[in-house]
Amino acid sequence: LHVDEKCLGKKLAYKTLKNKFVKMINERKCERCYVASCALDEDAEALKNYIIENTHIKDVKVTYIDKVMSCCCGPKTLAIFCR
Image 1 (tube, rainbow, N blue to C red):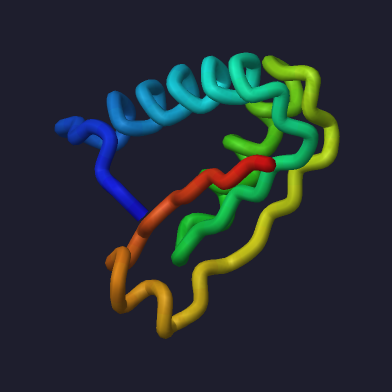
Image 2 (tube, rainbow, N blue to C red):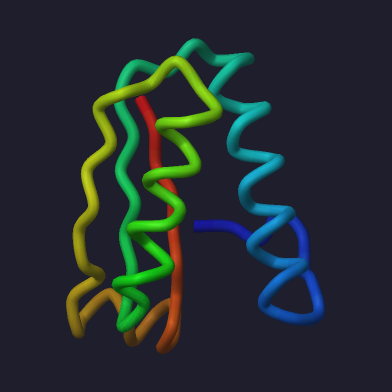
């Protein structure tokens, strides 16, 4: 995990995450995405739907960040992975 950019506020953070990730998907030609969250189920589903609507990827899995990983990243974390 690494910090790419810091944003103040939830709305700006989500907007930045969405824009950067869509750009990355198109550059790397990813085939599958994973959205992981720690206590943000609704936000994870919304992000999944955004990815499906705005990219060529239709296989998006939503999963949870477990207690061990959440110790590293903190509560209310939203992460996106692709391959």
